[in-house]
Length: 567
Image (cartoon, rainbow, N blue to C red; front, side):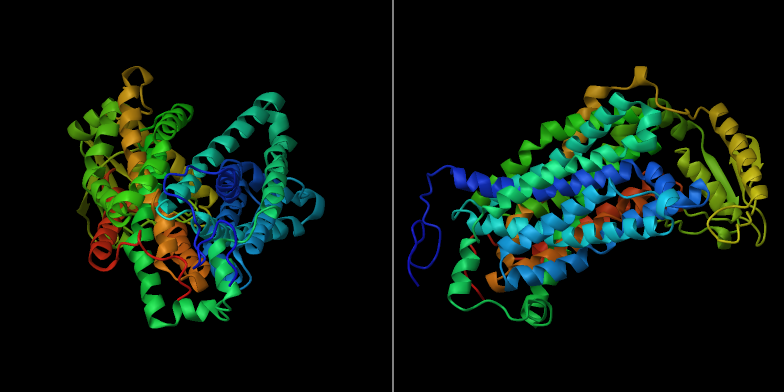
């Protein structure tokens, strides 16, 4: 093979160790990172605007419409691993550059078209069908985007700098979240709430075309990655990357270890530090939404540079123990950190939890694990209604068994409140009118009783120690940077060039899309089932510890692996 400028005889990048980032390398990192910006920009847009989208595209009562809007959102996450298979296969067969261009086009176009899509009132059932199709296309493209970004950047990186180069991709998730927040707030402020709800919500989706145009323009000018170009020139590209990656025992074992020994734990630490922490502040501690978002934003701003710090450190001391160390430290400290968040965020709640115990007396057969994927499913038994209501009010409780067939009761001090069994509507999505009336009455009784017992309706801003809250949230995000900063480079290095795009994408998206994405839902179900506001933390703790053990025993360090090896 002819030796091209900037390449060694064996096809490697000939870059001296002392050289900084060149203009071309900055372009590679920037172009690759734009997909992650798009991903989180769209994620926050759709999540924040789901109530408005429900009214625009789904027919029925508000609750039912909202359920379908959230299911459309969830569909995009569910299909990501399938996108990893589809686009990973293309990336390993025809090249990183062109696959990379296709994924950003599909992803960006899907976001933009939502802003143009006529509502249900205009085109009827076609509106929700097209919307769900766009969400599925978005999810499929995203499934191929991250693997492509990580692979492309790593294969352009000089020896000894892959962790540093790929860690820049991880910082752009924060950029996407901030960008979406700024566009939504700016549009809402400029138009006012009535106009925003009527048509202004489309603006944040439409302006995404600017980001798409920049992304496509830059990616069109990019060259193929050196590792893939060398492999293609040598005639060693894979003819069947899916079967090679997942049906050959050696590669399948590596993919399984990448999931269980890396991305599974990385995902739950990531979601705990950035999403469950926000959920805990707003839903459990009753901190006002704007205040909670500002606290999270400050912690993200302070901690985001550490993605690059830990990515760069992994080039020097290795990636494995930084990632696994983050999982272990997080698992060992989550309980005291979240207890401290309660102490500094809502001290009145902390006092009430200690001094005013609540007891639910119920038939054990009527108490269920309230796993609720969309956040809107109804559980009609008297026990589930009682425990769900208490959990939503941030009230810890203990449970006592009652005779079979009896209605659940709630004991708050010397007050006893009887729950009820609800009747569902024919579609099975909601309580009927009579049950809704009973639910409202029960909620009033429970609210009055827990208020009298000292449970606050919301956090008192005057008693909140905001600097300490930012510090605690900063620590949680530092854990995120430890596990996420080096993971892209490590996943790239675990697999041979000929199947790398396919093989690394699937465990990443199963880990982050399924294990991470299910964290808030699973955590709340655990809290409602056990009656302890901190019990949901067992989900990320157990998963992170499992990853630590599996990774420590079976995953090998990768920083010195030859990523130019086709096999």
